[in-house]
Image (cartoon, helix red, strand yellow):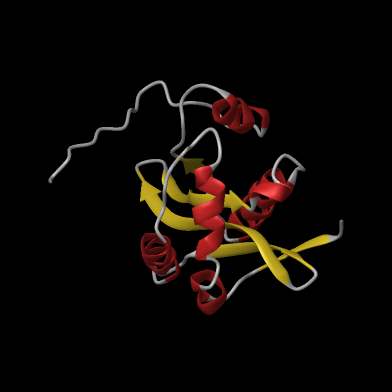
Length: 148
């Protein structure tokens, strides 16, 4: 399997909503994304100034992607990994880790000081990120409030 990685255009991103639908329907997420919501999510990211896009391409087909958005904090210029998704048949083959490495390489080249993300705090996903050198914040948590 010869996968290459490259920047993807907003149009390519919008056309890849099925990746979100299929990737997040699988364990450990079990999320039921509609195509409309997936397209809206991709549009939100790609229209954010400074959005970094990396696609995993196999034989001219996009099979996965990573999106990262600028996010400056008290610690300085950071890049938030907003989404990483791989089509289920290609998961657990190192493509997500390769996407992370590409995002990190681009972040270093653009003089970002750190890369961060929000994800599950326990289980296989947490192990995956720890295995890629990420540590959980001891100070921060995620708070949410339903509006409807």
